Image 1: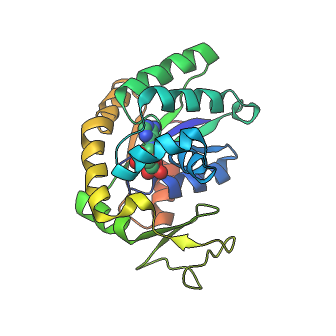
Image 2 (image 1 turned 60 degrees about the horizontal axis):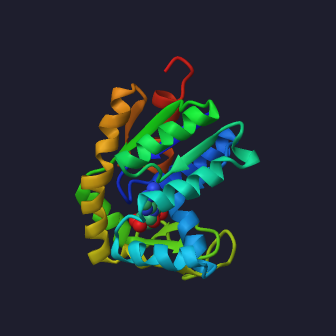
Length: 217
Ligand code: AMP
């Protein structure tokens, strides 16, 4: 199974991708998480990526495409994978098409999580994440049991650098201009399955399975 999860920042891509990857037994590949790891490691790539991420802009296509190409060539991706946050531009979508052709692979489905913009701003600014394992929390409806400490691994729960209100507004702008056109790109290929991401986590997962992942879909 090869899946893409597409949607605006804060639509629940990471949360749904983690659940789906667990249920389907395929690796969850998040380019955002890969970049955050390079930043934590203090690598040259991390230093470069941080400049863009901090401003709510996209990391340049050539860098992102090379990172994904390398990741998809790894052994654990042979039987399938779930991509979260890639592609994010039509240029990346075209490069990804070429990668797939080269690997003799095809995508099964593109799951598009649709959430109204006002909800996204609220969700993103209230979001907190574990700096170690990436578990996601929300200051209103999903607080960690002990304040500031991850329930899963005990790591520090903090606000992502790019979840400040100013950066969030820029990320939504960038999404509308650069990423949203990908919905049409995959619609034309008859791969897009649009689902409301404005429901509970469990309900969204249930609808994804029902509407996007049934064999006859
Ligand atoms: P995410 O965790 O998916 O919200 O990504 C966080 C940030 O990482 C984004 O706002 C971008 O700056 C960067 N990023 C993640 N994926 C990509 C991508 N496919 N292309 C360019 N930049 C990306």
